[in-house]
Image 1 (cartoon, rainbow, N blue to C red):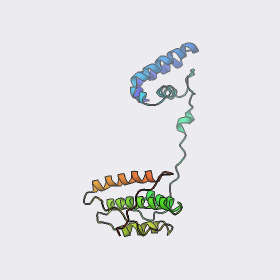
Image 2: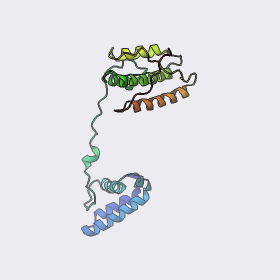
Image 3: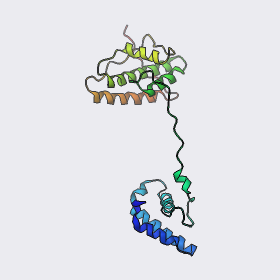
Image 4: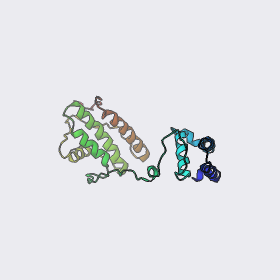
Length: 206
């Protein structure tokens, strides 16, 4: 491990050749103390002392025989590959919205009809409009967004007749649009929490 330098490597090699086990344990504790001084950034890591003792095993090629205060790792611990993360292979219905929005629509479609689902649809529609404007600088009507929601849900979602989107959408500045999208995203995640009441739906003035 180059970050410790050749001297630490030599120290550990020396400790490995000490025949007296008690003396060997005493010396390796001193070496671990030196390793902690040489790499103070490890102190920001949880259980950094555990890390140091693991590094002793790595530097010794897992050959050192010592009484470690932590479980002794094996070579297999560090060479085994992690389990692969399965990738979503279902084709996107609308690439400009992304898979997260498609998954959110599926989640909303599973909710029972009522005020809670209507509120989630309203927040989702506002967020979809922000994402739409990130890639398409032209304005987009709420009818287009509502039509996309119905299409992406496979007809499982319907838009309440009295629902309208807010009119305060940043125009002409992609940075502001991007920031607004993040704000809308945070609001949406709050509304998607179980038991969270829906936000206000803007209704047409009579």
